[in-house]
Image 1 (cartoon, rainbow, N blue to C red):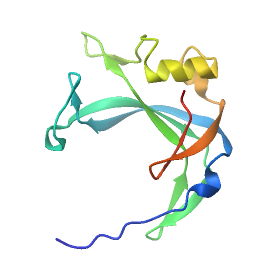
Image 2: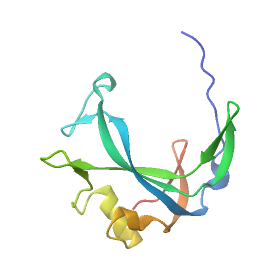
Image 3: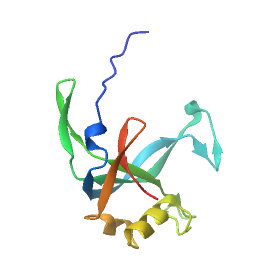
Image 4: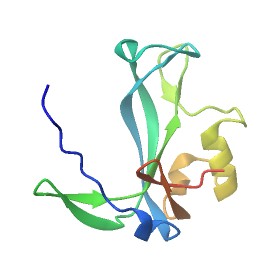
Length: 129
């Protein structure tokens, strides 16, 4: 086992700032939730989520490499019987609650909308409720 240097970034200067949503994209992530039940990390499965990101807030250097700093949030997607991915129509779904708050009916219409940046557990996000 070797020591690992963890990069720490002070995110407090960004909290409370307003930023416009710039990207709405489908990304693949590992999930520990399978058929509504939590499974151990080693049994995590690939799934798709909708990643909603703001415009670039800043540019930082991490281990000699420049990275864009953005606020983002992941929203669950669902799969139909024909293996097509889409967003849930359930009014209690996190994405639907957020879209209602933002007064849009489709995720792509979130682009250009302004959100308030928050720091959540070491990441930049925004209020979705």
